[in-house]
Image 1 (cartoon, rainbow, N blue to C red):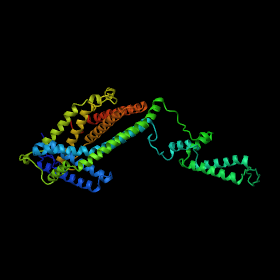
Image 2 (tube, helix red, strand yellow):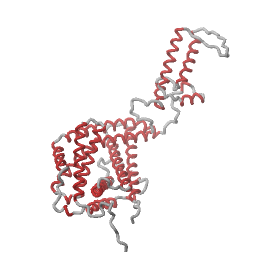
Image 3 (cartoon, one colour):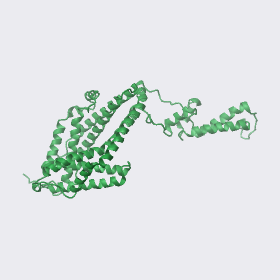
Image 4 (spheres, helix red, strand yellow):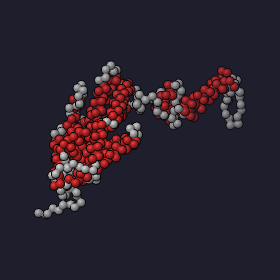
Length: 444
């Protein structure tokens, strides 16, 4: 039997002492203090620097809290038990505003896609060019023509007006041009103003003017040039389009209000005595880690392996066989329940997402900042993040549908939106099942 030799380049080939844990916690505490200072310097004004500082605060708080949970036997019990919930409170409070903004953007994009509209129905300013420009021009009584067509229209109107108000003069041109009608000065000024107005109206349309020229080539009447040529929508799509505008406005009001409240809550939390106490403890942690007396001879690998085993057990308890089907109609039916409480099927998946995060943090402690992360773990984490986002978006759509005295078309649009997000939940579960069931190359 060949003797196995340990890889000297692998930091986990031998025992990993508590010094690695202490160095990791000190580094994360330093990052927490640096992000806090940056956040105070930039202010909570929604700028990019402020958003990055808040994200760094959440990131370091999660990693410290997760490491305290995984390696709690090597740390002072009273200190770690009092520190973990406070760090979870900081991370959760700072994440609320970002979650509301992301949820609103996700739901509005889904409404765009489901209603088939080129732009969000509640937007007041139409888009420049394209279908929006054609519709605006047709409502104002002008035809959708290009700059060249506007000049032709002006010449036509000049000739028409001159038949009734001016005398006709025949001019013999050398190149055989046809008779040109000239109008009086007063009539010419009026027709020039009309032509200028038409040219200005046509200038608001996209420079290409391809749809108008195409319609002119097939002999369409100028008065019909501003009307869209696409077929009429189906009844279901029409009802959804009607309700999408009000549904989007309702979601915008509710989630914007929730985001404003989350922003105020975060500001109050950052200025509270509770947060100052947490920051003081993190400052102490940056210089001194409260390890137990037995931590000097302990090995971190068994504790990290236990975190991986908890993740594997949680994944085993998931209904991966059902999630292996691309379309899980039974889960969708349960997702349409009127119960306002969180979806019961989502809780085990959220728990797996948290355990996967703890497993990643444990690997960072063992391997350092450059911890190798396999494609399998990255794909699984991405699928579970999409699962969380879709389930929370579906809950927000269902909550909006429970608003009293909303129009039937609005309720219909919100119901379609809720079903769409539940389909996204099932798609994320299917993606997780596909990536997790793949065997790692080189293992049995």
